[in-house]
Image (cartoon, rainbow, N blue to C red):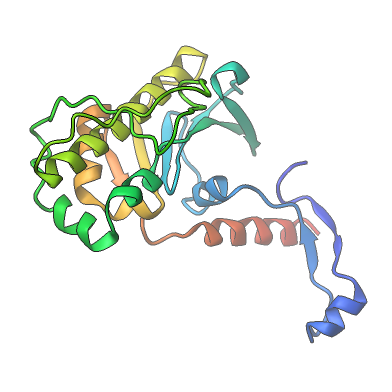
Length: 229
């Protein structure tokens, strides 16, 4: 069902229970990662949007759909373009598994972002991956662990950036556009060291967006639905 499709109105009993002056419209919504993308407004084809939450979710604005379920790739229709992407089991939850938020901030400030660690991690909390590698038995690779925690964190961030680069390359290999720029949303968008590492690995401009929450994208959809009545 197309996002913003009108489904009906709230029932009279619920409207009274919630003490609303009138029954509001109910419209079809979307996923959290797409709502985060909608919050950014219209984007040009070739723009990648990476959501750095507990998992790593990639979307690219594509003129045509991409379907490769064997690689965990799927597409969503949005107006006149498609959002093609996939979701990794890796992401911010791996970082939170090893470090609390204050420690992450402190260690991130000590990272020399232009000096790779060459640790070649594949950060996972437990075995199993869905995108860009679809392997339910894929083992985490987070060793050897350096004595310095900031180097260990840098290795994890580089591993996440490698997964992101591999994901966007896979989307292009299956008919999507090559990325021209990447916009970042989610909790990880607050980490400047991570942004700089990703920009180096992806070789395209990477911009962090922290002021437009996914709820704003959902509100855009609601306004679109209201305007169609």
